[in-house]
Structure formats: C-alpha cells, structure tokens
Image 1 (cartoon, rainbow, N blue to C red):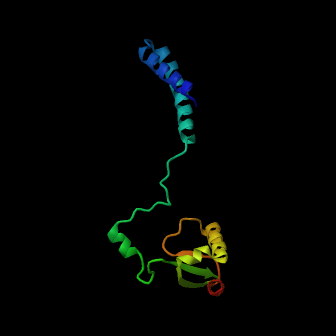
Image 2 (image 1 turned 180 degrees about the vertical axis):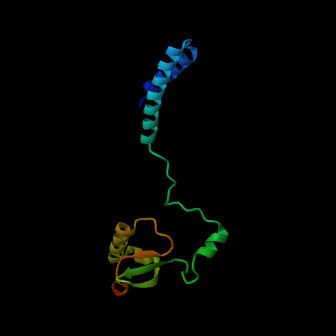
Image 3 (image 1 turned 120 degrees about the vertical axis):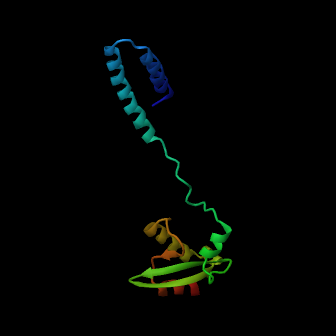
Length: 135
C-alpha cells in the first residue's frame, strides 16, 4: 500500500461523513471494510520492531548476583554437552581467537541459536573440548 492509497482512504472517509441516505452509508461501509482489510494486510507486512537481543542493560546489583563467583574478570563459562555427559569449563577470553574453539561456537549457534542464557552450551564431548584447550 502506498501513500496514494492512504490518501484515497482519507478522502473517502471525509466524503462518507457527509453522505445523507442509508444506501450511500451502506455502500460506504462496504468500501470502508474492504479498505480496512487492505490497511490491516499492509500493516502486518511492515517489519516489527523487535528489541535488540544483543544489547543487555545491567543493573549494578543484578550484575553482581548473576555472575558466578568462579568466573573471574576476563573469563567466561562454557558447558560441553554430548551423549549425556556434560562438564563446565571456565575459559580465558583469549580462547575466542582459537580457530577450533570458534568452530565449536559456530556449531553451538546452529544447534542452539543465540537465545542461550548463562554459560554457553557447546555440542561436543567434554574430552574433545579439553583437547582443544590443551593445544
């Protein structure tokens, strides 16, 4: 729907208010219904504004209680899960440059998406992650 269509609807509604007899009103109501369907369809096709999930606002008190005490500054937590076995690791941020670790993050993105809360879950055996970290 374009600007012209919206202008037509406004012009029609202004005329509709001035219609005198029942037949004109009935015809006008039918036209309004059709245009309202078009407007609804147009509005549903517009992109909706979704809150940016990459931006997180922290309250100082909440931030302190949410971060586990064993995760020090410059570190992050991951959980390696595969075949019913899981193990939690605390890693330095420098591992974010490790190509093998980045491949695991890519796999995690494909499997779990970006909606994870807390520690990152990696789809690999804990032993596999341990080997990557030792290299």
